[in-house]
Image 1 (cartoon, rainbow, N blue to C red):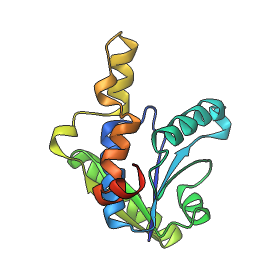
Image 2 (image 1 turned 180 degrees about the vertical axis):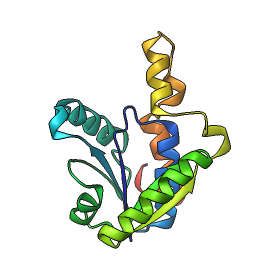
Image 3 (image 1 turned 120 degrees about the horizontal axis):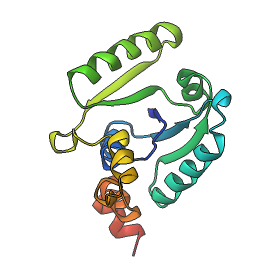
Image 4 (image 1 turned 90 degrees about the horizontal axis):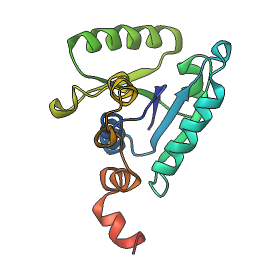
Length: 165
């Protein structure tokens, strides 16, 4: 089974990385990270920049693909060959919103959603928080994953020792 993880990822945080890494353990065919954009808002250029950044982050990580998409997430998931959607939640408010979204997606496209709670130590981290800190001149590097962190989180140690020597 392959999972489709949709979002704007503006920016992609260590919380997002944690969800991808955990989903890889559940979905043996991998995870497609779908960076969504709205054609009517004209944000396609910035979306493509995020896609390229994510592709570099996940370079050499097997079973992770990054795509841009517009339109309904369920349609993009189907085009990507994903059998489930992946969603994360940080608190009860997020969980209720995601539960309702999962129910709607099930109704319109007969697709299930894997909902993973974030790790407690990552619960304060959101893309909007990171953007606000950065806008106000703060260093946000601790909240943004590096390529090495992506490899460490997503590539099993046994695989690394045989292929990345």
